[in-house]
Length: 343
Ligand SMILES: [Zn+2]
Image 1: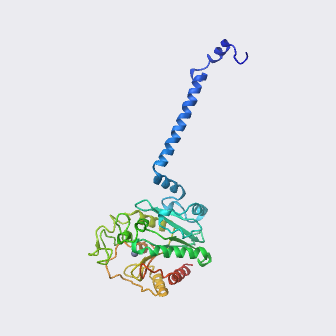
Image 2: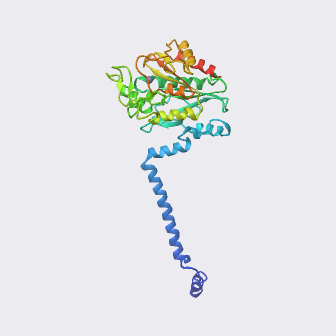
């Protein structure tokens, strides 16, 4: 009897409340609310599934800022950098071999034209302004020069196994693949370039950038030795070279050793006399490779090391004798000698 209530009393209570608060109206409002929440959730989930690449990029952007300078490399935020490094791993699309072990965690410094990540590994110690920072890079050219990726990975594995070999107060960044689209393309001559056919080592703001670029006639530059548009549409028109520029400048990197293969040489600023010339000569002495001050085989434009020289970074190109050799032992010795001079 009590549960049923008195019809008159019940009407009396609810009749004093606004229409919206009547029991049937309340139930409707709650149901509509639940439907709205479910619909919004489904829309979010569908968006994520519909575009996995975009989703991956967003996720990566949360972990690693797209622009390296967003991440201070010294001072009170140094611990943030450590956390970021520990939280990220290499995307297999980066072209880095699974045998290359980055104990501190791979992190993404940028993306290729086709959306492949360019990844780096940070070893060494120091988070202050006094810390020296260098980068060891491979595969700016894919195709025939893919062995440089493997050489940089071999270096990384050595320093992971022998952390004491990096002098105290020196941070070393390893970037095995600067051109992941080229590396993904295979071993053909056209795999040297990025996905837009740009020679990434001719796309830097070096002071002598040009739209058309030059190489050995009959080689991968074709019978004329001229590549129309090989330099890109402007300095830093390509996302891969922008990523390296922002990475080097954002992290305060002051020394960069970039590996090529096929022209047995060590070089720095074209024409000689640049800030990296002593380091280039040191590497040449230890490896036995000839130091070449001025390239005469063809005209060089838009090179990474020439841009580096302009912005106060010591950039050295080491060119392995061929695509088939690593010369690991002598190149490791040279790299260790360079590290010693930086501390
Ligand atoms: Zn090269």
